[in-house]
Amino acid sequence: MSLRETLSYSTSRERFRQQAEEHGWQLAALEPPSSSSADGPADGPADGPADGPANSGETSGASIDVACRGPDDASRTLVVTAGLHGVEGYFGSSLLLDWLRAAEGLPTQATASPLRLLAVHCLNPFGYVHRRRTNAQNIDLNRNFMLRGERYTDAPRFDAELDALMHPTGPDAWRTFFRLRLAWMAARRGPKRVQQAIAGGQAGNPRGLFFGGLSPSPFVAWCEQHWPRIVLPPGVGPRDSNHQITHFDLHSGLGAFGSLKLLLQPGIDPAGVQWMRSRFGGAMVVPPPPADAGPKGTARPTGRARPTARAGDLPYQARGTWGRWLQNRFPHGCYRYACAEFGTYNALHVLAALRQENFAWHHYGAGSAEHERAADRLRDTFYPPSTRWRATVRAKFLSLATAAAHPAADDTPGK
Ligand SMILES: [Zn+2]
Image (spheres, rainbow, N blue to C red):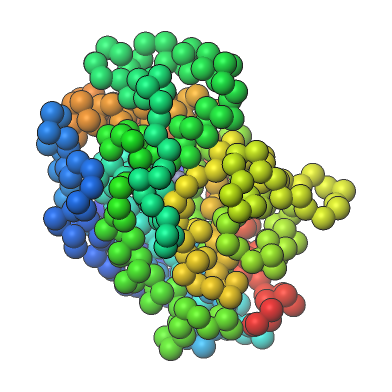
């Protein structure tokens, strides 16, 4: 697609399907979780709070589209997913359109370790359509995946000052010196602590930002039902350690303009960390924090002359992430997940845009002029309308996906 284009969900989905067919990918369309669970979860406000506008949770005509190519007897699968955070679907699906074409030249069969490729167009169609980060229940899907024994209600809550700052109640309040007040709070409490408190995931305000839900969202059940069948070839089970899955989940909004980092999640096997580092370089790969470490946790790599990213380089650690859950579901180190994070604007800009959209959604509702304006701003925050950004990000993504697909000695099954 052209670098200048910003495609709506339906146009993007149509092109994804067309290009997949043109370039020899097999297509499947799955019903998204929101419409297959029309009643919604028991927690949180279903579709709009009682004192706010009645925002619809329906996304008619949406599907989760999966394109696949490569042999059924492959020993490796490379998965690329987009739009877990719906509004990031604009950027992620545009990269997938490029990949559908570019991957045609990859030697999937003619190697010692045959490869399957999987592209998932958009995991959260509701968020893409409405230009929201969350699902229809205001749940941040990348904060909603607790492991067995972990409780949703144990997630932190914003204190009163932070809650008032991030979630204004009146129409004039949302833009009143927000950046200044946030900068002041960061100066008093420390920038990393503030970013951790805001973005790590919270259970206290169901209408708030980074709300992780109070129970598993319908998307968790959807993943339990569909994900193993999507990512594994026919006849291979999740506990088969001979099939290696590498998964890049596309995200944007964190980091320097146009930069790419691979954020690894707890539960990845040490060989997986090593594989990522040797293939993509220590500067790009941010290792997972050690168990129970806060935002300051660091996992020190073995000696290297080049600059090497550390877990402590991240501004915050999120709770309930999808990647950690996936790695937990596919044990024996066969599932290697990386959040492929492309930077856009600085944290203040990104938070201001998220805050404005969240306020407009809950206060004015879907379709209002106020929400349209705020949602457009949010879309542009996560998919900058800059030809330079788009060209840089496209080149970085294609070189990442190509390098990951290329067979090497360390891809031997079972290693
Ligand atoms: Zn994201």
